[in-house]
Image (cartoon, rainbow, N blue to C red):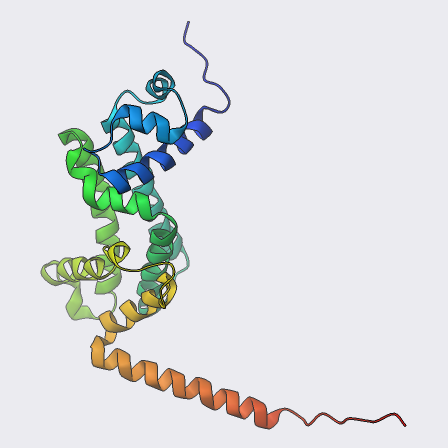
Length: 227
């Protein structure tokens, strides 16, 4: 008779994956042992083996679940039927918002997938291609000349190159947020550095003008004094 799973099985597995992702991000896949993983997950080593047969099994699930979230973002943005420019900006913004809250998982995906067995790695790579192709299609929708595969896929990889390694330098206590950086990346990718700078200056000037106009239109407050 098959053993019945506990009602908390999926919740416990998710907790294990979160702790394991943090450990892999800090120590690297090769540097973390199952004993250290059990300690980080706050479970016994035998219980850890109840959920996962080995480190590669854990690594695969971390990468697989994370890339599924990126695929879900692609589907959500596509369902909104935005204009080409807004569509691409939405993808960049939501990817970077996900990166902010899943930094450890993103580091594992970028750095440790190479340690998976060939069949497991092929599954992850296939899903990564779906994400890349979605971004390539979004780029090709901007202008007809960008629809050629020889151009749109390399451009997609350039865009990912701009955002995928932000975890190495973008700090939570720094002056830039992931959301503000997403706007910078989108502006640079769509308009170039000089174009992005000009757009930023124009937007700033527009905001200041609106603020001035708002102050000028605001009626003066009348005060009364009580004798």
